[in-house]
Amino acid sequence: MQGLGRVLWTRASFRPAEMSLGFSLVRSEQLFSRSAARRRMEDELEPSLRPPTQIQGRILFLTICAAGIGGTFQFGYNLSIINAPTSHIQEFTNETWQARTGEPLSDHLVLLVWSIIVSLYPLGGLFGALLAGPLAVTLGRKKSLLVNNIFVVLAAILFGFSRKAGSFEMIMLGRLLVGVSAGVSMNIQPMYLGESAPKELRGAVAMSSAIFTALGIVMGQVVGLRELLGDPQAWPLLLASCLVPGALQLASLPLLPESPRYLLIDCGDTEACLAALQRLRGSGDLARELEELEEERAACQGCRARRPWELFQHRALRRQMYAYASSVFRKAGVPEAKVQYAIIGTGSCELLMAIVSCVVVERMGRRVLLIGGYSLMTCWGSIFTVALCLQSSFPWTLYLAVACIFASILSFGIGPAGVTGILATELFDQMARPAACMVCGALMWIMLFLVSLGFPFIMEALSHFLYVPFLGVCACGAIYTGLFLPETKGKTLQEISEELHRLNFPRRAQGPTWKSPEVIQSTEL
Image (cartoon, rainbow, N blue to C red; front, top):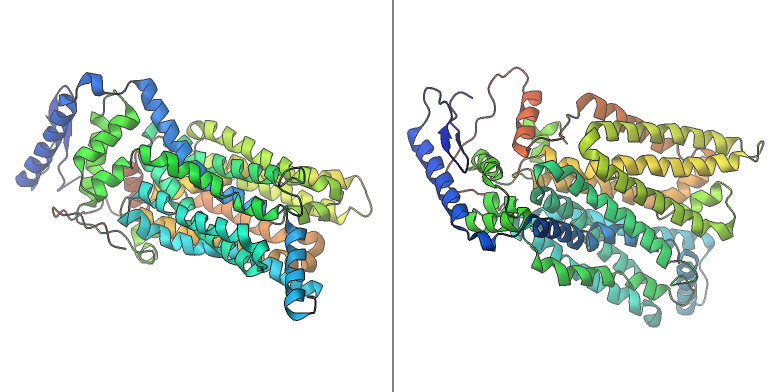
């Protein structure tokens, strides 16, 4: 690239790249001294202090589990546990109102209050998504996940004492708080894991967020069974049980390393970055990965963290920009006694496909899984709609409709459930990544809020055609992915940024011109 020099080195030798006319000698000496100093630090480490490969794999695995159990697991868990006590909380709401005013609520108002309780969760998620960016930049990825558990503790207290206090408003506030917690963790956890994982495993590690989401959904469905905490008297404990995964994260995550990229690029702490890499990678040769991190750091020199609205203003970034499960099964004709077990089946299907997609994502790539998942969801949704329309004439279409629900969940799990969480980490550089996660998270939670609030009324209005709006979303997702999304499998984050720059500026032969003052101002949103 004309006007840009690059210093390449390995453990055994140092070989300067070819330099074009006008390359700054001072900048070359700075890069050389920084690379040489890092190599000496790495070589001076005692061999006995370097963890073996087995320990390295264990540290990375524990990092995934500690981030996931208090992160996207909480999202899935709190999304599904609200389904089991639906009738109990509605009865409690009506009884509480009658005790206060002497008159019961009408059925329509009970449904409205219940819709508000359910929809406050994604509304809190929206606030959490907007909060995630500043937290990730100022506190770091790991500390943000730890601080986030404050919302979980407060929500658990509200849930646990709501029945005794005779206040359904405490349930509303608790749902808002666990939503904030979910919004923060849904954005920061993929960022943390994606920045901590090696290039070869980045997709699979980031897909673990989808696995923990599906696992949380299944656990919430199981714990909500009538035989466990789904009893009419036990629903406060069911809602307050979100405290358990939060406590597990608080006990385990402080023992694990921070994101090496954050430590080097945002904080400028070379020693801490190297120590984190040593714990995550073990005794392997870190020279190449350190070189890639140094290149990304040089590219981000002098750049501050992007603000969310700047992603739409900047041409180089513009391109990459279960709560009602029982009602759906009842609409399909499933007997009431079997609904709770059918719901567990859907969660199990999503968990199974999340595990499968984690295995195949680095082989098949992101585009194939996304296009295939969205296309299959469009197909099964169309068949589901036809089956509902023919249900009165052909009773056997009941089984076809239920099969389509499971097939749609499987299709969602194999691609969109996990791959969409990777994209914000891979398609944006270190300076734009927090803001990109804020935008993606905000859009997701806004849509979830609208669906949570409006789905009961959509189901009444559209009847057999309730799935048609989602068909349009799935079809648009498949088309957009096929036309605009580049493949990111097996590429470094810097290579992905350069490819997106070529796509955004096709007429320019040269890459982006980066300013490079010495101080990295990346702590401002």
